[in-house]
Image (tube, rainbow, N blue to C red; front, side, top):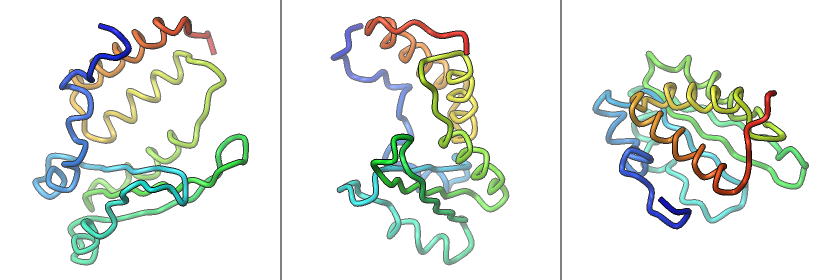
Amino acid sequence: MTLADDLPPEIGPHDGRELVLMLAGEKPLAMFSDVVGSTYPWPDAAFAPHVASGALVMREFRSTTRNGRHRLRHLYYALPQEAWRIARAHALCLKSYDAYCREAEEDCIELGRLLGYSEREIQCFVARSRYLRSAMGQQPSSS
């Protein structure tokens, strides 16, 4: 595996399919985040009718990057009975680390679970992240 390899099929299986998976009851939470003013194609219009009908709940938060240079928009959709996941996912998204560390990896695993990824998908993501960090010469810190 090299840095230029395509992502393994286990990573990103929900991308572009969040709404379909949520309406089928297969995905409890979807999360979107980007810099305010970016050209990111936000999914608001596709999700709006389902929020209006009560099939999904939506929460939006704004934050600022750690260096204060950019404002971020965080958009979450959840199945009504899974709305508790939003607050925890957002808390994890707001955390930042000076270096790769065990806590960062544990938070990433927890976020994957909140988003409805399988343990196999999560472990594939973690293994790829470890590989990429190793390839870039980044060793985990103890914090």
